[in-house]
Length: 218
Image 1: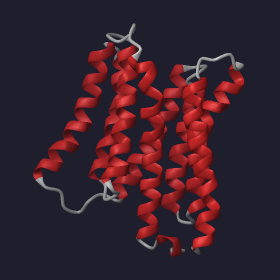
Image 2 (image 1 turned 135 degrees about the horizontal axis):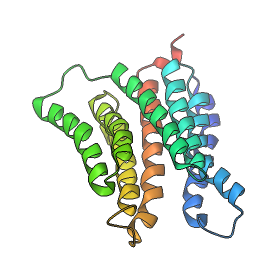
Image 3 (image 1 turned 90 degrees about the vertical axis):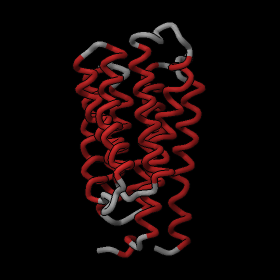
Image 4 (image 1 turned 30 degrees about the vertical axis):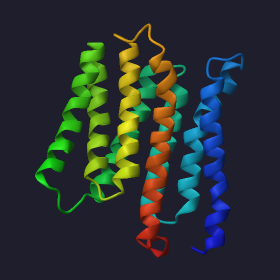
């Protein structure tokens, strides 16, 4: 893809940053609920548009759909926690399939141990924080997504880090249901960890596909 075409797609990324960062400042404000819900979904929703338009191959469209499901979950959570979580579960499963497709061919024992730890510790902590089996069940998908991202050959400083930030954001949400119910920490950190986690995942996947020359794939 010509350099000019790449530049023309970057406004979607900029628009996502503006929407995602500004939402943190307006959440819980006087803005009517419907507009605030749409504002919340715009940050990650625009990441989906960026990924879809920025790259012509199926894997870019898959990460775009992961982000679209995340944006849908962001909005639905405001009206129904269960169906919002379901949208995220579907996104986790799609992300796992993508990361497994790009799994590292060789992993040292220590890296395999980290992968297993992410898969198991995240649902364990989720249950310990909430004592709710359904939360732990959801967290198996979350842990699977983080583990698969770490085991993939996408750049860890972006994709695996972004997945870990997403997981930490959810763990803070679960902590808000229990030991941190009266703390301001979840309120301050949940959204920036989540949004910038999704941002890193998107640009990490798209950047890796571009460097591998897949812009020219049929």
